[in-house]
Each structure stands twice: as structure tokens, then as C-alpha cells.
Image (cartoon, rainbow, N blue to C red; front, top):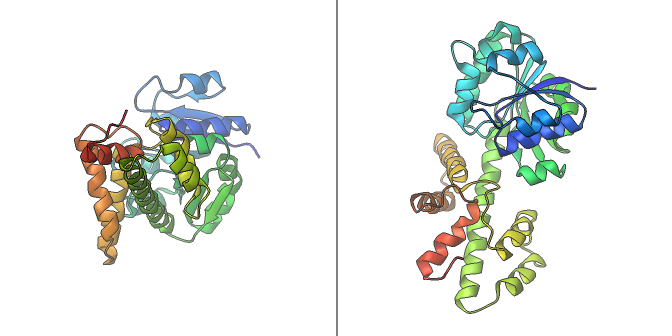
Length: 297
């Protein structure tokens, strides 16, 4: 069934999600705080809204895909014009697909309940290429009836869809996934740096890695860019550091030590402080190469 849906936040992921929805035949409206990001989507059939306040008038479902907890709070909770306070949203559904803290998500949930807006947490695992290829993983939590009503729409975005329970369970699972992604990236970087310090060819190393027991889908996704020395961001070092910050905050709240995650978070901070923050998080390898006196170009 086709749905009138607004996609709010047109970074790499939000744009790819909007493309999927347009391709599935939904009537899609889009909005971004800065202009100019909607041009290709409009050419593909989307309607660009001038203001966030138009969203509920045009849509039964709003999907937010924003950079961080602060951005979600601005979009959802602003006293005048925030999605959960807008009377036009009563009875409609807000789906947040961003990676944000469970704390801020809880504030949004409480305000949504007060404002009569249905709220589903649905963070994702994957990059824009994964979205466009139709392989995105979506982890959803909240009221099960809200999930059931949104399930078909979410499957049009990504086929690997998991309902994991009430509240913000999906937020914690997403953070747990990303700490594993970051840790795997650091180990892959160390693997390459060690081999190249002993004059092992990168293509030969990665051929073996890709056929070994450690060849996860993530590792396989990164082999091509590593062979090309391509650090174009699919997910930046800055954003990965942000996600590890959230994981460590959640760990502290739960009284759980995450020693490896803490180290990788500091390594990503080092990437940011040396000008690598907007490169892909595999820039962890560039940082290692610099420390080892190896070239990275």
C-alpha cells in the first residue's frame, strides 16, 4: 500500500532512504535544514517542502534521519513547530531512523505520547550503497501495533527488518552493532599496517582476509576501497566517534565497562584532531600509517 510520507534530513542516508521510497511508489515529500540537497530527489518525483511545519499536512508518516541527538531534539521537540507538538500530527506516525541516545529518544517518546503522535524507533545498520542495493538492516522498537502498521513501509526501505521490543531497545542494539563495526575497522587497519610494515602486498593480504574466517560482510565491503586507497566517506570518523560516545554513555548508565570501545573511541578522536574526521572511519588506517611512518597515498 502506498503511503504519503515525509523524509526529514537529507544527508547521505536520508537521501538514499527517500530514493527507495520513491522507487517503491510512495508519495514522498522531503525537507532539509540547508537547501540544495533535494534537487535530485525532486527530479525523481519528490516534493520539496519549504518548512518543517508542512510535514504533517502532507504526510501520514514522517521519517527523520538526522545527524545526532541534538538535531532530533530540534526537529521533534522544538516548542514551536516540533513534530511531536504539532496538532496536525495527532494520530500520525513519527519514525526516527537516526542513531541517537536512548535518553533523548525517551524524551521524544514522552512528548509524542502527550501530543498524540505515534513513535517508532528504527535505527539502521548499513551505508547509502547498502540502502540503494536493497540490503539495509533496520532494527525497530516501540509499541508493537505501531511497528505492525509501519512494517510494509519499512520493508520498502530495507528487507532485513527486526522488531526487538518496547521502548528504546533498538537504540541499544544499534550502539552495540556500531561498537563492533568500529572495533572491526581498527583491527582491519592494524592487520593492513602490520602486513605492509613487512612488505606484504595489500592485494595479497586482503585476498586471504576476504577468504578467511574473519571475512564478515563489513570486511568484504571495505576490501575494495582499501585496495583503491579510497577513504571517501560512507560513514565518517566523526560520526563513528559520536556513536561510540553514545555507546560509552549507555555503558556507564548500565554499569558496564567497555574497555576496547573506549580505546577505539580515542583513536577516532585522534583521526578527528589530525584532519581525518570527515573521511570514512577506515581512516583509522591512515592514522596508524602516520604513526608507523608509512605513506598513506
